[in-house]
Image (cartoon, rainbow, N blue to C red):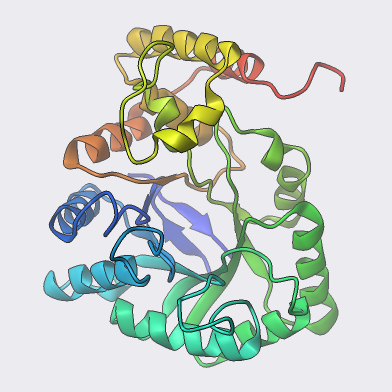
Length: 323
């Protein structure tokens, strides 16, 4: 498996990253551990989680996904240096209104809790889950700097930042000689392109940030399981409905034809489209079963010809030519 460099410290990561939002939500612990083991055995060395995963699920207080990942590494004697471990801080963990944000006090407490749940002494990529308008970016970066100096964090990343917020953070790092965000985790896929491509892509390209798209299959829409007259009753169907449009049904038909030509699945075509972009470091996949995982992993063997990628670009374009 070909590995890619993420960040200034040369973290070598697999071309796909295993996300964990489903752990303890749509996948119980037994299945989550099976998925983790199968992914690791297939060569996936990059695992992404967050402290709040998945507080929205009944009976899940948050921190559950981190605990599952930590127990998996411990119980299976996974060498720590064989895993690139990413987690996030920002969301409310339920201990009151102060138990959230990107203030120094919250970050320093949250990282200790994440380290404990993950059963590790360091986090390879620590990410601001989304901005905090109540805290100055300098305070946030200085808190992160403490963690880097202590060896608890290797590199920093951001998620769900707008272009101006990302530029403000990069400027503050440069001006104050502070560690900078080396990666961005944006919402990006074939049917959700403008949020990243409008401005963020240029920032990442110019300042050499790794790009780790989440929801690369659009909440399941780009798996092909949703059709004009077929809407499965799943936990994520509500989120996928936003993509129900004639334009996107036509796109799916085009992806069907391409998948048939390449003996691939629609999911693999969607992931191959991201992998064909040199700006993308690795998409973050999520799997509720071994079958889903195997299908996603097959995308690394699907190669889109330039003309095929261009055709998908055109079919899913968010702006007119010349705009």
